[in-house]
Image (cartoon, rainbow, N blue to C red):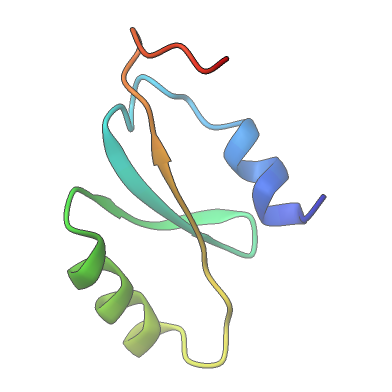
Length: 64
C-alpha cells in the first residue's frame, strides 16, 4: 500500500467524520465537505504532488 493510504488508516475518524480528507506526504493538508474546492486549493499549494483523497464515513456507517 502507499504511505498516504497508511496515513489515512491511522487517522482519528471522529475528527474528520463525514468529510473529505486530502493527504500528501503522510499529512492531512486539507479537509472539508466540498471536494472540488479542496482539490483546487491543494493543487495550487502543492503543485506536482499527487494527493490521496478519501471520504471519512460517519461513525455509524458500516462497510461490509
